[in-house]
Length: 435
Image (tube, rainbow, N blue to C red; front, side, top):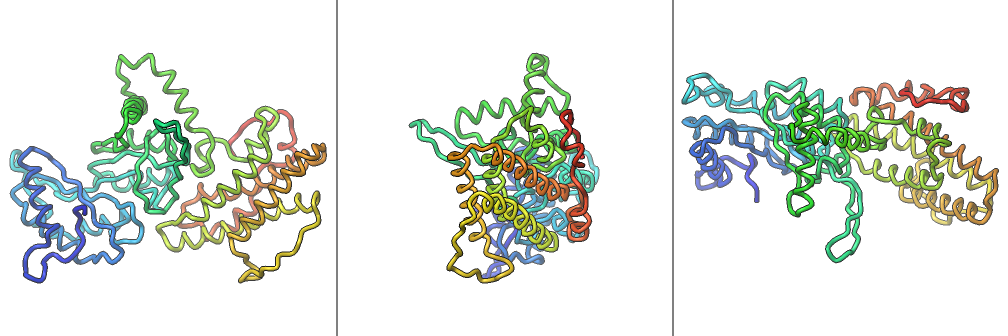
């Protein structure tokens, strides 16, 4: 069991909570070995008591008054407990009595603030707090004086891995807001590279690379990660100068469009489709991938409840539009659809699982027809279908350009924003441009 600030300060016998006792001992040990900081978690229990957390921190600072060690409160990966947000960590810090929080440095005599923050990039994503460079930049801009340490790591993305016995197994993607605290390598995860570049260039405190290190492959990845971070910091070692072009190409590849990374990092889906002739896309692969992404988005959770509710409504709207477009093509080429005997609980809003299954069945039917009858008309209709779906996705992804807390106010306005004019879409010389 890990050490954190949860629980009552004293037990029934009137003695200090065992966790608090252990933390005090560790802070004192840290002082003896010359460590300057001690990272501390708030605790992930849903029933975390605000007063207990603050009182426990007060007691730790009081009992370690004769040390120079600074307590760093780390943002939690959980999103349903007190202390999960940066704002709550700041609140905890502000509630600590000044006589416990401030201390004179034993060597220099200068007054030091003994409560600072540790900002973890992976925790921030899985807590449902932020996912774009702008989200992370806001934290660094607003709390740069409070953040003493940055834990830099990525979020697990779906991929296949072959083990030593040549068996291939799949690793599942970490869902936004899921609370799953599993760290990933910087160059193989979901977070865009622009975030790490921002962290390295803007973080005023120290930074620790907190990525996996279990196998030889992990160690090789960490060497690449350090090289990449030095590249972002414009601090490449002379021995790595020949790697500069390789690093530049690698970063360009990493920043290719991914719908969950946000539209500001690469091509919008509409732009991908408009370059269909230049970079051919398999229509069925695109459609299947769109449905897979819808399923992942459905599981996402935002820390802010108002925003979470607004995103759900937007997602339902998006699902309805996409499934309708797919169904129209399916009906055109296979009009005999047997009515479902099972009634939905809500006639106006069918269960997502039912809708998901029905739409995937529609796609399978379209794929079957495509294999049996490779008609020009069907190819044209499929191309138009992915254009329509990409158009819907583009409107949805424009939300990432607006402050998340204003999503519920701006959705109607965004629905009216066009993506690309028809004459631009159809022009053979269309260039890739940001909308």
